[in-house]
Structures are given as C-alpha cells and as structure tokens.
Image (cartoon, rainbow, N blue to C red; front, side, top):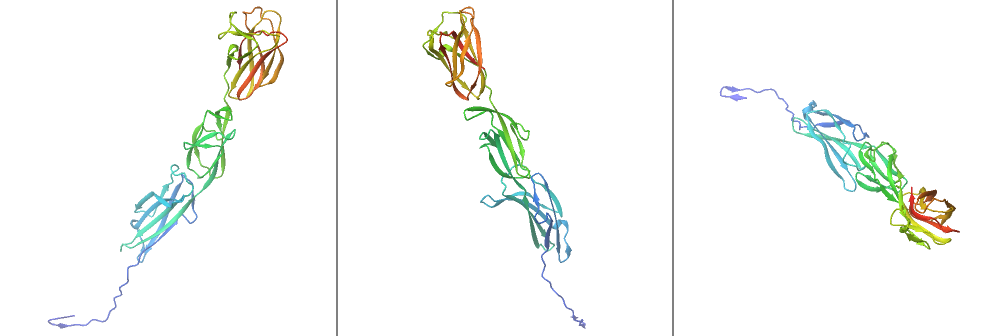
Length: 336
C-alpha cells in the first residue's frame, strides 16, 4: 500500500475462489418399491444439503404426477407444486382414472442460496386385482360405469378405485324374461363397487319373470270340426265353441309364456247331460288322456275344470280334442 507519505508491504496471503456447488436432494418417503391403493394417504418427506449444510424448508418444492401408459405414455398433475415444507401428504383419488396401467411419481426439487437446484423422484406403484362380473344365469347383460357388458366380464383395476356396476332389469335371454334378484355383495341393482386388493367375482342373480294369468277365448283359437256359437248366455268374449262330432273336433290355443314352468290350465265350460271327456295335449304331448267335464245343469251355467301342465318359455300349443262323445261348450282357457 502506498500514498504521498510512503508505502508499506504486507505479508503474503492466499485467496481461494471455489466454484458454487449444487445441492443434493433425497426423497426418504416413499421408499423404493412402495405401493398404493386408491383412497389411501400418500406421505412424502425428504432431505436436502449443500456445501453450507442442511437446507431450510423454504428450499423444498414438491410435486406429484399421475403417469399413465396405455400405449401413449403421458402424465397428469396430481399435487403441487408446493414449496416451503420438508414433508407432507396427498390423498390418492378413488374415482376418475380406471386404467390399471398407472402409477404416481413424487418429485422433490431443492434450490440453494446460489440458485442452484437438485431433483429426486420416487415412483409409487398400484396394487391391482382382477374383477369378474358374472350373472346367474350366465350370459345376461350388465353395465360397468354405464357401458353395457355381457356376463361374465373380466377387467383389471387399481385396488380402491370406485366403479359403478348395474344389473340390467328386466331383460330377455333365450326366450325367457329375467328380473334382477340380488348381487352377491348385497348391493342394489345399481351400486358402487370398490375394486378389491385381490381377485374377486361379483354375481348378479336373476329370477324368471312370473307370467300373470292370461285368458284365451275359445272362439279366437283354431277350431276344427266344432263350431263357434253364441246361442247361450253367460259366455265371455264374442261366443263359445260347441263340439259337434264325437271324435276329432278340437280347439287349439296358442299360449305365450315368459318363463318355463308348471301352470294351471283352467277350462270354462257348460254342459247339460252326462259328463263328457276331452283329450288335452300340450305341444303335441298328451297331458290328460280323458279330462272329465261334469254336467253343469244347463248350457247356460258355466263351471271350470283344471289341470296342471308343464309349459315352455315362448309359444305353446294347447289342444282340447273330442274322444268318443261331442265335448262340452268351451268358453275359454285361462292359464295361471
């Protein structure tokens, strides 16, 4: 150093200039290999240092993204960016994305006083399960999130994700009408299903739709040999069928049924004089070789005779044929 009055020399000294060093970032939670179920809370935490030591919370910035890969790798923002904390948590949604090909990636970015940054990330993989939607009987129509599917239908989903399942009711299959009875998990016809953590089957049970009683007028059936008449009182419809010949006169009705099963065939008739038989066949099979029709006291007094017979779902042919004496006056057939 020198000035107008003289100079002075100091001892030697060394000044070392060290380039600025970036910080380090490390995510401690979640740990490597962590998994998740939808609806759970995902906790995160980390550490950060630089040449000066541990960095303060203000140096931390967190972000979480949902990655999705169904042939087109991309991501969606799920949380953040949020700064000013060394740890935190995030509740994983249980609705929305239904693909099993997803995972969450947690990002930690730290920035030191010199403006230098470091970044770390950790993946959290989903727990998945195979779900089968079945029906009893098999092959009926269901809905998954409003989209029709045919049971049994199998899909893979992330555990905890909520889906909407619906048993379509009523519906027709194989010539039979079906109505919803119950789901195996106790849910309503349409209800929320939480994807389980292990493979499971949920079955929608159905029952055949019961057929209401139906009446078929004799004069509207196929009449062979006999004649349609209206010279008696008390009949229903527009008339009745009067058997003319001792043999082979018949009335045949077409009976439609939603469900197969045993039904009561109830014949309304009138008859004066001794009892007369008719042979009753269903779909060509004899169900009563000689069904007796007793005297009702008058051709205008109407009674019923019935028997039980097996009917198939769909169309049935019920025939009443004279066998040895002209039959009674037949008014109608009621199927119950």
